[in-house]
Length: 436
Ligand SMILES: *Cc1c(COP(=O)(O)O)cnc(C)c1O
Image 1 (spheres, rainbow, N blue to C red):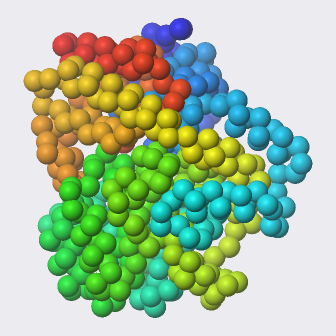
Image 2 (cartoon, rainbow, N blue to C red):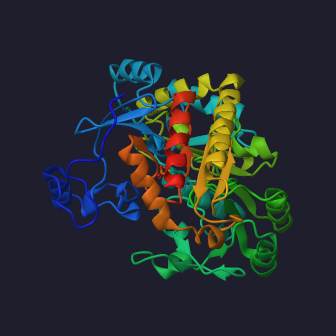
């Protein structure tokens, strides 16, 4: 395998810039179409520009090859350019790429999601996780005729106004906008509480429960690094939501079809009222979904009176790609294999980091190495990680042809395309870093 030995034109902050990067910066804000692609958090000015991907590897525009642990942030459970996905996209595209009208493919994918995900009796297809989360919240509010929602610090649900909220630690806090452009009016009904803090949730429900439309959470947090739910946490959310008449909404955009065919809800045995899906369900194309109880879903126009729509919703290419992926995920051996490989990665990393102040979190094919002695149960706890040390690890791995998330607060995405040799090579490179 051709391994990159440092990256031409991509030194640390303040170094010379490649022509490509200068062009990008001139015409795209910050040079990237989504901020997570920038690499400033790991001390690099210039991000990777990817030209192609194959299985577990990506190749940059400069012809450097990397072992890829990001996998487009989660969608690619079978790795890059999976031949079956490519074939169905090509075959479907030849028949027309969008109709803005009903197709049988959409029914097929919806039926597959209903069959796979315990909470989903009916489902709508949309184009992004952000759109699915925004729609699920509107639906929960419309169905309950209530406005307030509870969300957790460090959980991410896309960038809809009402969900872009940060708050300090401690007990329940009313939402304050996380940045300019989010009007305070859009978040006054968002109540923010620490993850894994049942007492804080109970307190918030006691104070605001009467007007509470939904409790929204990532059942395994993946956007502050991987933070599993503490035993009893999801069960408590289920009870508290039911007791006050709010809907429990699981954002399974990362965990759906990754932690098992039925997602985290199947793994932990806690069934929400609504579920948000994205990433894997689109097979690498722009597709997401929200679904749940039939009585709630039937409140959507035209069955009911809550509005939600989309020109490209259930787009044939995305639907065909998603269907090809989720149908193959009926085979339980895929999840057994991901679990085995996840355990191999975890065992290797535990040995490589033994005696160092790190915490390794893993659930199935999702993991994060925190530079922090732990425990890592909430945003306040993970936020004490040594992000400079993580940045040094990122650069160490990159120089050895291994690409991990350019931020401490993300998850490593294992795919079926990662081999045992890929895992062992990564573990060895981490061990080398820890010894240095
Ligand atoms: C990625 C993500 C989203 C947003 O999905 P987009 O397709 O990027 O809009 C929402 N929720 C979770 C948990 C995610 O990881």
